[in-house]
Image (tube, rainbow, N blue to C red):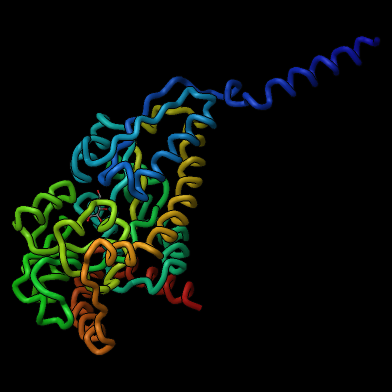
Length: 337
Ligand code: TK8
């Protein structure tokens, strides 16, 4: 056997052996990633974090380990954001709405009735406008990786069925800690009370508040049906979740390590959206079966609500900047074509 052939065989053997363990040849160190989230482990959020963890372990040859910590055990969205900024926690997922205090541009996603369907949301969030808003986080010590779907939000309460605007009068309604949500529901006549999600179940149970608004998936996975009788189909806003990383920590990672996280985040996004949509499609039936009384708004009442909520648009545009407001409207119009 010639020297050349022998070398070739040896090289091929090494390549064949090394291929499945390609990550070992990469610049990857042992890393522990504390990944916090607010919902229960048994939720669309929990399932997607689990998938992310598996993908990271696989792609890093087991070197990078994700410790998933749900049910707000590491704190509310706002508390975790601060931990990421300070470098005390590596990753989290939560609503974009809870980031508005840090990055005001995030409020663009709180525009009532911005998207008519999930396809429009995906197109705009994954497009240049979504990226631009996400990149704004870097100035504040956070790196955004992907948007996940929280979903279209619907109203529940324990007082009475909400069939018309006036039925909201005086209802103590928990809203996210964010001025757009606060103003939106004040405008509709509710007594809007900002609270972190982690305190919501107890607040409903003890009747500190009468109602709340969240996607069907969350109403189901957080067992709000145990403490809420009435559900009104309002779809008043599409709520994204966003996966974020501590910039302090991210900047110390190698390019290969950053790529492992970015790729796994994309996989988790695609999985999460599918899983969430499949669950949402049957969740309303499940909630009825659990005893919730569900009503839809008449087209006339839905229009009244839409028109009233239009009043908050001007202040959103002023807060996020007219340029971003216009770019977003144009991106939505293009996605609609
Ligand atoms: C979970 C929250 C939740 C949001 C809310 O941490 O607060 O109502 O919808 O998903 O981010």
